[in-house]
Image 1 (cartoon, rainbow, N blue to C red):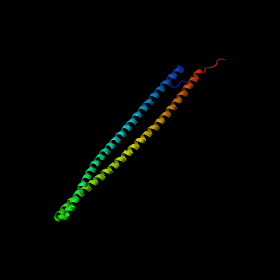
Image 2: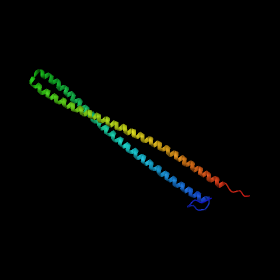
Image 3: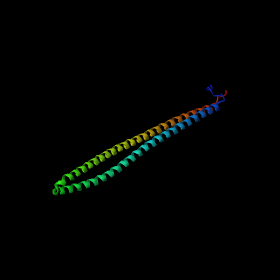
Image 4: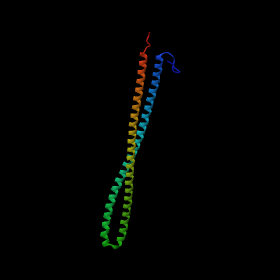
Length: 183
């Protein structure tokens, strides 16, 4: 049997040693590749999780603002209704004060409209944030799916390599047991 280039003719022991060393190098490289993939996946997961937390924090802040504005708007509506009632009763009694009070009511109404516009803007912001959170969740689901597929591929490759290794080991053992017959 011809000796491969770079191998000594020390017999099957040298070939096995070289093959074992080569196999050890391949296994250590596969382990390193596996570790690098795990680091990349963890980093991507942490980034997605941080973005999700940030968007949830924004949502909570916006919800708090909406609650404060809603309470303020309710107080202003009550004040407006009270003022309007007062204006109507005084309008019957005092014609001269009527115009001044109506003007004041119009200002309050204008302020309420502005507050409602702000509230509508905050509600739209909440909807946008909810969409961002939904998108982030979908991205996370996609990462998890990609990770599962990658794990299946790695398991398949490990099985193929293991089968090749077992097959190669079996062939070496079969050769080492065969001896030439003497006549």
